[in-house]
Every structure is written in structure tokens, then in C-alpha cells.
Image (cartoon, rainbow, N blue to C red; front, side, top):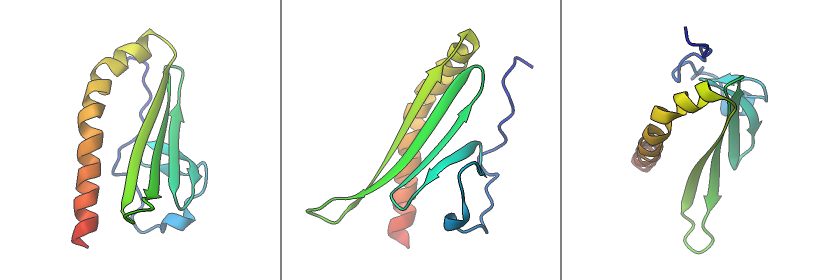
Length: 111
């Protein structure tokens, strides 16, 4: 209605598809897979309003062996509609991203 494209939903991920079968340009939820390696997954999406790139990086601390997961997002805004869209999204992202990482850590520790 206001010119933003429908990206689908986060839950539109084929859970029966093994991670190794995902290839660049495959859709993963609302994103397109750009890179899929053992230590990092890079996802993104582009339109006339903004470009979004999301990295989920895994590293092992040398001294403790602990696995550290870092999520990084980069957004390039192209126009006013993109800036207006980011006004509510940016502050919510700062709340949602850490809570998702905590939830993933809890699930992993429970296994």
C-alpha cells in the first residue's frame, strides 16, 4: 500500500531442509542467502528503499572453548520511505536481536 514489498514471514523456512543444502540465492524466511559457511551465514535483501545485510557469525574462544555468536546487521537507506520505515524498526531491533540470541543459547544449552 505504501510501496514496501511483501517479504513473506520469518517462519517460512523449510525445517526439513538440511543446512548444507542451502545455496546462495535461496530464500530463508524473509531473506535471500548470500553466503553459507560453517562459521558464518550472510543473508540480505534489497529494494528501492533500503538494502539489508545480516551476518550470523560463530567463533570459538581460544582460551575457554566457548562458542560466541555475533549477529551484525547493516542497513543502507536509499530514500525517505526507507528512513520512515527504519524509525520504529531500529529501536525494536536493539531489543529483539539480543533476546533471540539469548533464546538460542538457552535452547543449545538444553540439548
